[in-house]
Image 1 (tube, rainbow, N blue to C red):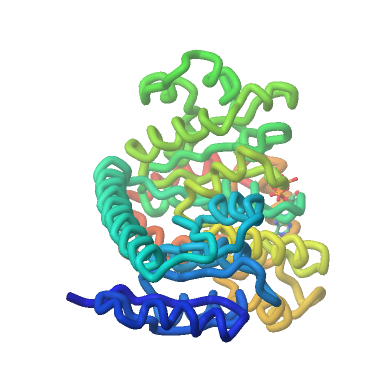
Image 2: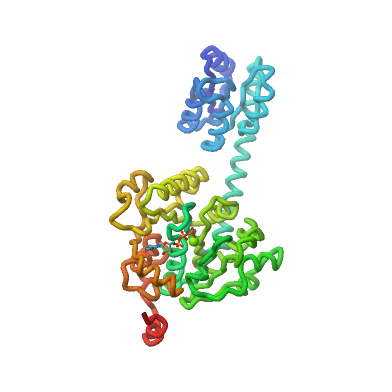
Length: 408
Ligand SMILES: Nc1ncnc2c1ncn2[C@@H]1O[C@H](COP(=O)(O)OP(=O)(O)OP(=O)(O)O)[C@@H](O)[C@H]1O
Ligand SMILES: [Mg+2]
């Protein structure tokens, strides 16, 4: 039988030696490491992956509670037993909240120590196996029931081009890649995707959420406005005060249903950290952080990167530079500050973009020979959203219709 591997974290050498002595005759328990402060305990937990950590509370640098919190997040497979002295009950409560499994109050006997280690180890192992099984079941049922990918354009700085990119990319995915696409305008107080697409709005997401406590696709479908390109749009509320009718639970329900009915759900967001946006960021497969070449936008994107990585969403992040020109911060400096490679660079083209917004016709349809249009279409390939073959026009629209609609 493999012994239970134990790490001792205590700043006093004598105490560590005492614990080692108490465990010396226990054949099924092996001390594999010693840490003399909280930071060292966190590092050794990651490196040695012990089964059990005996953690002192008062230690220099990072104390036992901080170390417990960090290890519970980073190395959850380790079970932590807090070792304390009498009168530290407030600390004990904090330690248990931080993720410790058990505590031992000094002085304790060799058998008390060994029995606690065995019991905690067994319970923690069982819990880990249970968690693993549940996670595997959840993942496989998600894979079965949900096929659509959620792509979200996000930046807490306004006016960087989220809506312009979201509308054009959604249109291109529907029109060129022939995918089933829905665009969700979740800029709930100031959404303007419907204006950019020149669609007449009858019902919005605010009306939809007032319909029923639980939706099904047939209900949502009645609110999806078809666009010329083939994609559908769920418009933002028509007045700002209606935004508060929409709650994160609604978004969760709507997204789950749309995922089973569309290939892509493209989401345009408001430039804020709100409950709605946090729900969206969590559900997203890819989060496209839209960057411009100025210092304030760079700061917003850098902060977003940090927040998303704290939430463990780093793998979803792609940074898209929009309105690229020769002026402004250089690409290499942007990449250096963000410590990432830009996924795509969309040029500034005021004439094309303004023209398309004013006419309510996305430039990927109406001005497809421009560089800005080519770059947005390339974005689909760069994000691995559709295979290159899918992007070839299978049935190009009849020339006469195209020229009638897009006569400039
Ligand atoms: N590539 C581009 N070239 C030139 N102008 C652009 C480009 N992209 C966006 N713009 C301009 O920037 C303006 C803001 O774009 P957009 O509305 O898409 O930004 P947004 O990030 O959605 O803003 P908000 O946060 O306010 O919703 C638009 O009016 C458009 O004219
Ligand atoms: Mg916008």
